[in-house]
Length: 255
Image (cartoon, rainbow, N blue to C red; front, side, top):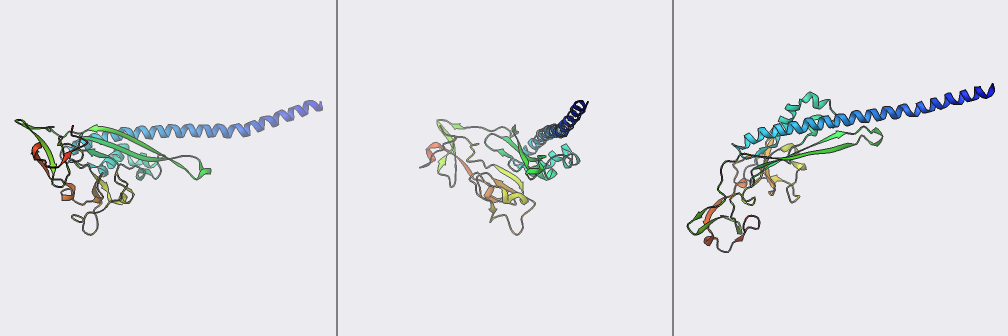
């Protein structure tokens, strides 16, 4: 009788221990599953909104060949809904979304859309970590008809600039066409050009405080208040190849 009582006691104790270990693990697994579903849901929402916002940007670049990253981000937030974003697992809500790395390629006429954001990871024991997610895709922009080369008789037409050391066979060469982006001034201190350098105020068009948004290029080191600033333009001359003088051929567009 005493042995039966002892066995019953140990059985009940074993069930209690299993429940004490199993229930928290089950709840943790359920929580992880919910977070995975929410992460997938917000990813799909941002991706779809980015595609639709990019379509609107395509229409805008048909008149002004500059990708406005501020408007792109605003359109994404509007399409998802600010209330939905603020109650999601995005770290810091809508301010977590950044689009400043998006730009329009003048050589190909494509929009290179880059949307980055952070999601919270439910691990409080490790200091509330977050994961950075990046959505990137390309979309063709309408740029009209462009001749990719002209010939007059037997003389081929090439393109040069006032200060350039090479000539170009393609008018749309990326060395000739600057990739201009409109970005928020508030985040400029964190942005770098393709060489890793910072952006400084243009001496020609920035006087006093800068505007809410400024213009930058991939290869430049200045930010501009005006899209018509001469620092954002290059004077291109169409000449016969025999007139290029000592200039060599461009490595990107010349054969």
